[in-house]
Image 1 (cartoon, one colour):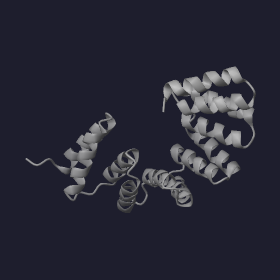
Image 2: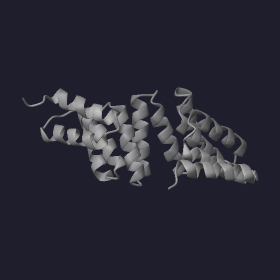
Image 3: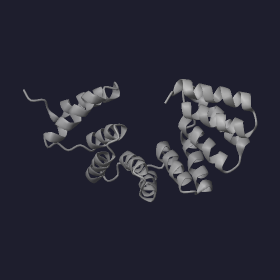
Image 4: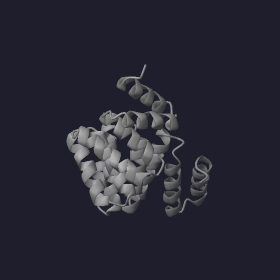
Length: 207
């Protein structure tokens, strides 16, 4: 017998959660080809395509998820990340602000908005939203790392160092945090320590 809508979704989600993205993508596409509609499928499939670098397709899928469920905060945040990668920073900012409006405790949206505001040169506001992300989710390593980069730009190297070290404490394999710590230590003229941080970043992420 033909698998039901729910069976296809469950199989797709199972593959996705297990990291089997190629199988998950097949199930998501099959679901859509059957004419079924579910906001979670469009959003999840959009995330997969973003990882594969298919940004325009990923954007369309997130917009479809939002069309089906306008108050789906995560989809607005996901769309913001895609728009950022497409270089549409103002649009990305609006998407993340919408996500926060819909779900004020969505730490990821605050962190991502902080990143965009940093790229737009709005450093104080970027710091505010990144600190908010940390307040909501105190063990969110990426937020500490992002805060570190913002504090570097603000010239606050000592606090930036503390923030990057906190990111590493939470997530020791976060290569970007080791790299950023290397930059900070280099600026503080602690060159031997900086070298160790850079080497650690390279060992974790050779590319």
